[in-house]
Length: 476
Image (tube, rainbow, N blue to C red):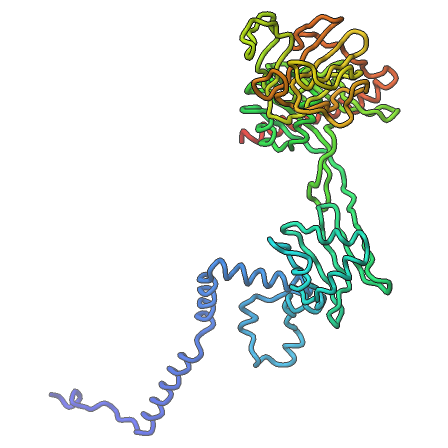
């Protein structure tokens, strides 16, 4: 071993070594306690990613509610958590934290109460739920004759109470329909009743349907209400026999008035225009009100949809027996002419007068049971047999209008089941009502034809456009 290789490393003073160890320890501690900004940022990102969707939705909704209640910008929900009491007063004044929405709501209406009617509820039980004594119910109901409407409760109905600071009822309000609400407001003279009816706006709506089952089912599936379906059948009832002519693949288009309150449909008005394709033949109808204020339906070119007689006196019935001169009677069991058409339908189904006329009979007539016979001018006569009963106001010697309900399907007389026996006579001779060519009513007056076409043509064009748009979107 040489002299240089055996030379020991330089020695540092002991105090230097202790100082170096202390500095190293302090640096390690600083790194543990104060991580770098990059590390902290990664942790924040990770915590955001690990938040469950439900937690994010709740926090986002809380922030949105606070914005709506205060109209002030809201910081991240995480910033609200990170801000501590160590913030300086200056910082707090520069960025005030908005008050939570629920607290604001409480301050706005501290004496407001709401209850929802459930099964078994009465006005007394609802008053009790908001802390009002039973005597208040009597006071309210006896205050005004119309106040009793508050006792006509419906399941799901909401009652809103306004109370005075000492807990007395000052106002009671309830919405009874989409367009109507009622209220009672206390005054020096007691409670005053008030009814508020919202005036709906009217717009037109379009619907298209294809029949692949019954008309009523297909119309409901397309979005047409039951009442509008009945109206459509009435409009085309002069040309289409809805008891036997409807086939799978038939189509209809309808534009109708729709009543709207606050963006919600609350009712329907009349059909404005319609088109019905039956067995490949298309019928059109347009509602027109003349200068005298009378409304009726016409074809798109101005001919009347209204004939002298309705094709079928019972809506959506089934023909159980046709006109025949050699049919075997189901009860008498012998060959006997069947000089009419039988329409089978559920007991109580309305029967309509086929046309305007005078009632020759509304009473019993042998095997026909309860019967109505109507004389239409000098040429035509119709008979309706086996009725369960007669409609109010229909009596011998009176008059009826086309489409007016005159009675209801029954089984009176010689009948094996509920149905209408319907006969049609021309100059005293029985004819087949299904094969009889019906006389037409008057078309649009020449003086109003231009005005009619100005309404008819845009409606027909809109149905074409709406249908084309709907079919195009369904192919995408």
